[in-house]
Image 1 (tube, helix red, strand yellow):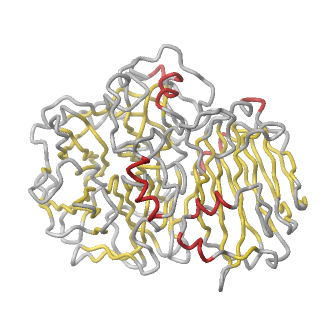
Image 2: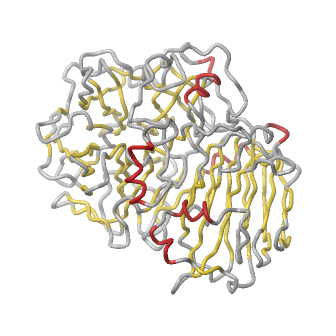
Image 3: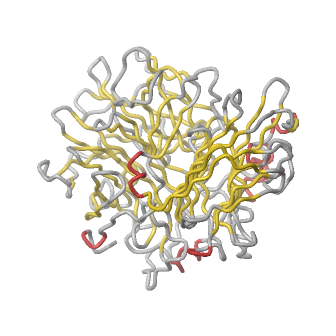
Amino acid sequence: MDCLKKSSLFSLPIFLLYFSIILSFNNGVNASHKVFPGLQSTSTVDVKNVHRTGYHFQPPKNWINDPNAPMYYNGVYHLFYQYNPYGSVWGNIVWAHSVSTDLINWIPLEPGIYPSEVFDKYGTWSGSATILPNNKPIILYTGIVDAKNTQVQNYAIPANISDPFLRKWIKPDNNPLIVADVSINKTQFRDPTTCWLGQDGYWRTLIGSVWGKQGLAILYKSKNFMKWTKIQHPLHSVDGTGNWECPDFFPVLLHGTNGLDASYNKKNIKHALKVSLDVTRFEYYTVGIYDTKKDRYIPDKTSIDGWKGLRLDYGNYYASKSFYDPSKNRRIMWGWANESDTVNDDVKKGWAGIQTIPRKLWLDPSGKQLVQWPVEELETLREQKVQLSNRKLKKGDKIEVKGITPAQADVEVTFSFSSLDKAEPFDPNWDNLYAQDVCAIKGSTVQGGLGPFGLLTLASQNLEEYTPVFFRVFKAQDKYKVLMCSDASRSTLKNDKTMYKPSFAGYVDVDLINKTLSLRSLIDHSVVESFGAGGKTCITSRVYPTLAIYDNAHLFVFNNGTETIKIKSLNAWTMGKPKMNWSFGHSSY
């Protein structure tokens, strides 16, 4: 799948009311695979480097979207992703292919999968990899067979299993493996998951779909991986959520941070089901129990199953895909962050889309949510370092972090405070709003009690533009509510009403008994990936400053609350650039 990912700006009823209006804008919610026939094959003459990332994954030019079939195989990490070889808008999609031994430094190869057969002539869309017994990798992917957008599920296998990079993939003649029956919407039937092997000896996979307004994770099973049968009922479905894209289903340990293979099904585990909702352009997930006898997934009562549920990332993050890494016994999640400027901007600059930093993923000790953290290998790019500790921030104070390159940095900070008494009352009417709506009301410049405090990233010297990432603590009826925001509304002086500059936000489920809050932000020219409270709440923002670029970018720590905040510790690093030997790969790059 793919699409420009945009959020709901209002509470749910208002969002639905205005949905048809939002569709008319380029920066609103668009239908999947929005096509620009006159632009999709427009070759890039002069690639603009302003706002290109330094250490996030992106090819030298052109459009990218979903990460496909990431896997670890024989000591090598493989990343496939949707790519347009001929332009910087969606179209002409192939599976670009890059390999790495550390998830940071990459070598591009020739496209692994591309339209070539009757069963994928009109498109090769997203899919997943599975490692079969005897260490044989196989990919399931969605093929488009006609101009009516009919979708089927195909497979591909390496042409030469002894090639360490698995450069070439073949698509056998017995494709497609799975064709939609009369009960399935054939134009919304895509993105097969990594397969798992049940105790009954049958393989299973999920395919995202919709029937009416009911989102579906359709379940198929196979004894030999070649002949697949649809189970009568979906593994899971939810009314009113719309089309489900890029489903992901995997087990998580109740205790510890280790990952599990998709087929693991013993004691002391739960399962997580993630879906990408086509309507809202956000990623939602629940944690629950997989009933293997009934082939049903039942979310826990603590998991809201719908639009107000938990998100992997409360910002510009979509079409994620996870995989199990046996080399370090962990589950890793990849995500895509599209651009927030216009299609015309993408054509002018010659590129669009990045992959976020891969994240290790595990279940929080509470059992209620997932936790994400940048993979440890990212730390090999850390260069110049600065530290601050025990610095007080009174109301209105800000401290500049000097000695690093703020446009390309990694910042970890822990804040502490002596009292919760000044936490503002939480307005009960806000229960009907999304967190980002509250952030839009209570922004970084609105004086509070306990907060707002945090970082001013990609800031100009005099704060004409900046992207604040901050916390604000509220007192609800029987508990404290911590709001985390990444607000792009002041991120640029560019006066373009079509640019998307939201106040992204999410609540952080954290115990404030120690009166501390931690924040990590990965700042990279046009992206700010932030992790609150050790990765309980994650927000990715795409921003395009006009003044705060390159050496003119600044970084500040600030407090606009009446409660004095202490910087307990701050560590910040300039981030180097990974090795991306693009000349090694196919000429289409």
